[in-house]
Length: 116
Image (cartoon, rainbow, N blue to C red; front, top):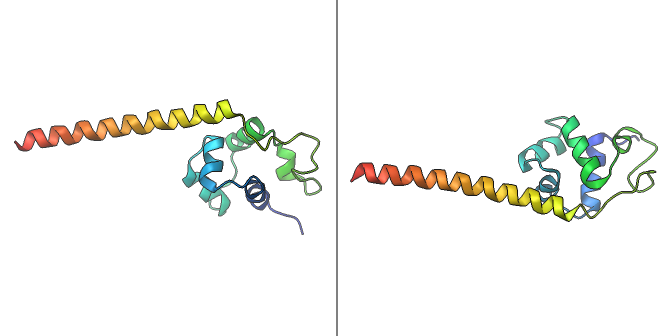
């Protein structure tokens, strides 16, 4: 029986021993989006397929062709994503969350000052 693209993607993630959150972080997408993709609520986007190629050297052929899977594909599979890329993504997430935190704190300070 032919596996769906979603089944293949989830199987690949599990092969890497990554949670959906960890897998999403390495690909630069949100955990929410990854969850929607794995449940079939959202289709695989060209952006995600490009990220799979860039981070894991996983060709679209893996997701499309029933005769190949990531273990015997002609393209070497990177099961240890580029650490520099992962670190860069995590740093970007920290900066984003720090910015959100700063904005919330600023708003709270203004609200407190207004009540005085």
